[in-house]
Length: 102
Image (cartoon, rainbow, N blue to C red):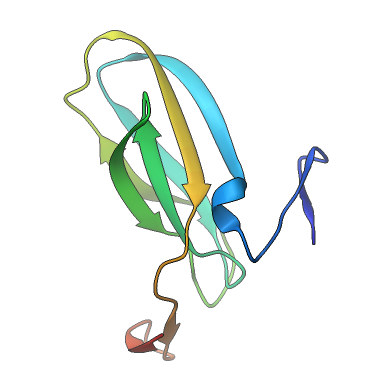
């Protein structure tokens, strides 16, 4: 197990228990993240409602890349929560395409 920002242990058996939260004011948010082979799928919730998901897996490390935009939000103080979940894990070939998912 590893810790995120030295605060919380990451349990690979329960990825949904590891998350981060951010508060912002606006009607839209662009989400950027690093990607690497230790990462997986994440869900993005706005004020508790699932709005998007992303796949942070990549065979090699990418420090920061665009993941998704969540728009058409009400212009107010908003709470976004992002955390892992158990989705199908896809094995990618050298061209970046999924060979198989399990």
